Image (cartoon, rainbow over all chains, first blue to last red; front, side, top):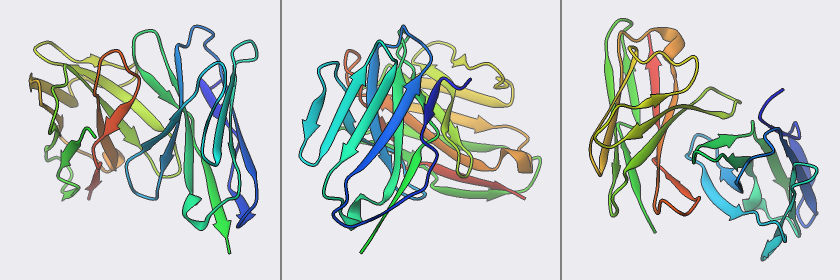
Length: 109
Length: 116
């Protein structure tokens, strides 16, 4: 079983749609959680950290369920510029970050 | 924000040669840097943790004699792929944590290695 697993993609949605990504992690001792965004052939960039209480940043909402070892990302009112691969990332006690395989999102006009 | 610079961005080499990739933190000191490898359509895989002034810590399955890591200063880590082979062709990305207590990693632009 992979340490971090994400929904297989790609997700093809129209502009304005709401899309949700799911992620599960296997190590119950994981300490920190993030969503990164990676554009094609570019380096990943931090989209948002994920906190136990859930957090929102504009059109993006991230949630964490430690009991279920589950992380989610919700994007509302999708824009063309949201097209990218979204990486679920889990931080370990030792400070290492483990990446999921990514879910590709394509927003169409 | 913090900036991590990686060089070269692209390199093509012949099989059997060695290639060095540099990773620099431009406006902060990084005692720890991380090297990742990413194959097409796959996740970033952590190769090793580079520690300033000491030996790198390699992940299971990563050959330390093939992927030499040197972290000689607080702003520079290098990855040398020795005796490269076509199967080493990949996207190599370094990263550094801006503040030790914070989780965010800043990534270099990545280096695409093609071994002929």
